[in-house]
Length: 301
Image (cartoon, rainbow, N blue to C red; front, top):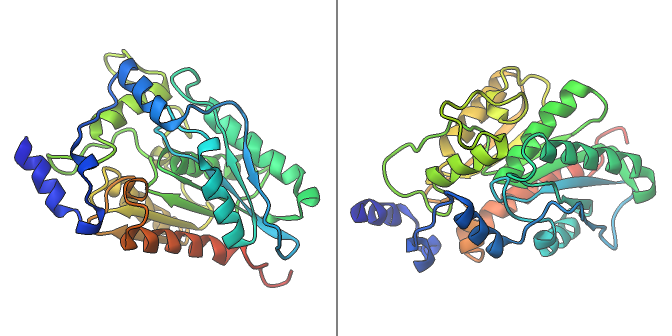
């Protein structure tokens, strides 16, 4: 097992290496979940974080941002600095959504919170100076998976519109297994399995049943009519294969998509080595993809 860990470490670019990566952690039960929550701040309070840049062209676009944490941890409050920076960069309103978390609140609680947040933003768009036709969704990990699910739900309900989806290493498929034996840093296959079981309310089931519609966005058969997408993921990320497959299926369904697959990058590298040039370039491309949609009004406005 040691050689597998070292092999994974050697595949990681030097600028992304950290001794922290060699400390094992698996989300596998209540005790490890409590440990994760102590580090990440538990959310689900409904206290969204909203950033309105001091100067912007009106009406501006807007972004709904969904934090990561495997559907079981994290909070909008922990994203305040990122939200302010993104709003200033885009010249757009950014709202970090504090959705309810599993296992206390399994699917569909978080998705309905996301839909409610979108509806609230649309209803307040005139007061906020937001163009309701330029509302994008974005997120990281489980939050990106939630954004993908929200796009599917919005398409099918037909009440609102999302113009773009920026998905940073999204958690899309409960069936994911590692592509190779060895170590996936930050988010392992064991952690992923436990988090999905919490989110889907299926802990303790001998033979898990397929999740309900919209819970695992990769399981949705019809992807036509979804908003254009940017999907960013590292090639050493547990989610790499599911992201590539989802991007391919979006293209096949006629959805414009940019897949940004970064050699050597692992899950959550932006949290481990936020100042690494590789990470900064990756995040700059994410911002550029959002800016192309929300920062300038479409022709005809």
